[in-house]
Amino acid sequence: MNTKQTAIDAYLARTAAIHAKLARLQQLADDHFGHDPDAINWGHVGDLGWVDAALDDLLAIFGGEHA
Image (cartoon, rainbow, N blue to C red; front, side, top):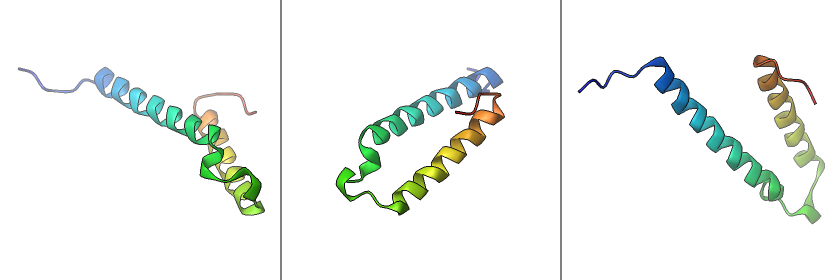
C-alpha cells in the first residue's frame, strides 16, 4: 500500500482544516466571542480590531478584497 501523501491530498486536508476553523470562528462571532454584550469594553473592541486586521492580511494573501 502506498502511503505517500500527494500535494493535492495535503491541500485538501488543509482546506478542510481551514473550513473547520472558519466555522468555529463564525460560532464564536455569533456568541459575541464569549463576552457578555452588556459588559463589552474598549479592550474587547481593540481585540476585534486586531482580528479584523489579521483577516484583512489573510484576504490580501489570496487576492481578496478588503472590507
